[in-house]
Image (tube, rainbow, N blue to C red; front, side, top):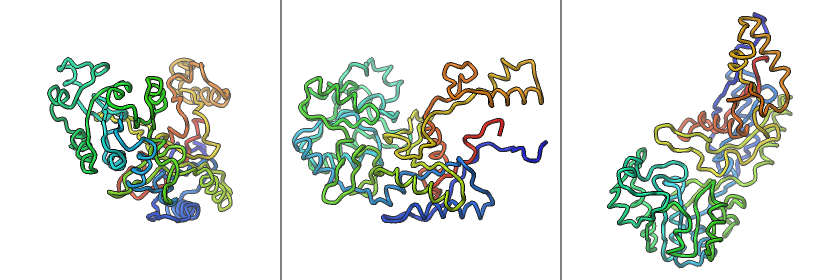
Length: 399
């Protein structure tokens, strides 16, 4: 074996950081943290390494928070403060419950329309077996709370043990608003109750808004329209509003970070100054993957990465090694096979779309793939590694 031949491909390291507070200099903290980790752990940075920061520390450093009262004031102004249809929210204490508290505080009545048998990201409201046994058609049937209970009873979330129907209803009542709950999967169903609607779906929000307006709704806002400008000095997100927010306290939410392009460019530049290496930098939130047991699609943020350097634009351009081994070079083995595959990789074009040798590779955005890898590495608990260093991601069989 040649001395210089590498025997390891992609390496992912969670980098421990101090607790980030509002006003902290993330460029200095992240750069120092990565360089100290390299020194202590005995590795070196290389060109095209990826340094990724969680959206949480970015938003915290920015101080991008708003209160329940801020949300209430925004909802009251934009939706009239009377009866508001709140449709297609995800089932989450962390992601939506505090937002719902603010929404309820900003109106007199909430008509809460839940999708079933699950929410947009796969949280189950009703087990599919119960749907099959009930004779209910979720594609067409609109159910009242009484009809829902008669057909399905009480159903607690598999992971949290929460009955979100009661939980959300209680939250609304605690804010002094009346609540009515219905279950439906087509947006127009809410118009039988009110023509002022807040659609809370994430990735389908533009279509839902269009459908409602075409069906005659008087006012339609998406969550991205709430807190998309500051209120009394609050945080905000001009592109995503409340989308991507997380519970901070019982009266405050942390919003998705504001424009962070300058941040990723500044970290990239500082690493270049300190090491001479041209790394890529990104901010990441939820990964885009699905849990096989709970059927939950992880992506509750509006995007995986809200900011990244230009070297992370695009999708992978890769050949499938097992396809080459089983087809083009099935007659070869050992060093001959290795050399033939290496030559194919070195000769591959810049666009492999339609090439059979690339079938089965992942045609997803690089930021979605790397962000998912980073989210799985950093987790959402107490690992203390809100920065992730990915090395060798752009390497291939030849180097």
